[in-house]
Every structure is written in structure tokens, then in C-alpha cells.
Image 1 (cartoon, rainbow, N blue to C red):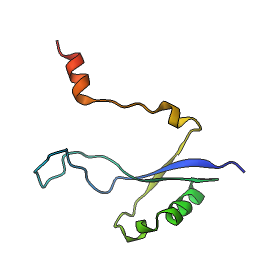
Image 2: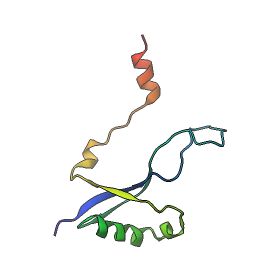
Image 3: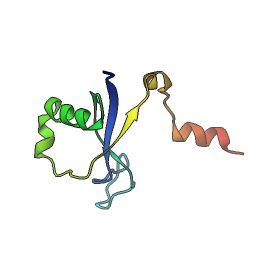
Image 4: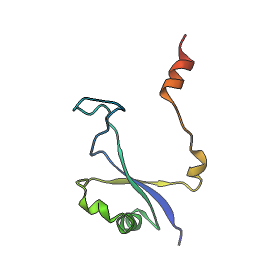
Length: 90
């Protein structure tokens, strides 16, 4: 039996830019619900709720998942929009 890691996401919800004063959402994006382990995505989803019972109290409903590959943590890298812009200015 192989245990895999899954990331659970939803299209529901909104995100605002830092220091935003607008009541309208600034960014269309995904909300990360959590990461959990299981033999398959259904088992991982059950485990997600065992580990984070507060999710039962949220209004999120439509959740989807992706299996994370074995060395996904090794691919972590941070990016900066401001730094990118300053490097690409002519």
C-alpha cells in the first residue's frame, strides 16, 4: 500500500491584495483547503477532515485535489513580482 500526498483546493472564496481597501476581490484564484495523505484521493480527503475538523464549519463545498509527486518539496522556490519587474525593466 503506497501512501500519497494530495493538495485540496477550491475555486470558492476570494483573495485581496495586501493593503487593499476595496470591498471587491482583487484576484481570481484558488483557495488551499489543505494537504493530506492517503492511498488515494478519497482516503486523503477523509484524513483531511480527521486532521482539520474545523472544515466542517466552513462554507466551502466544491473541493478538488491533485496528487503531489514524491519530491515536490524539493521543487519549492519563492518568487517576487517586484523583483521580476525591476529585472525586466529596460
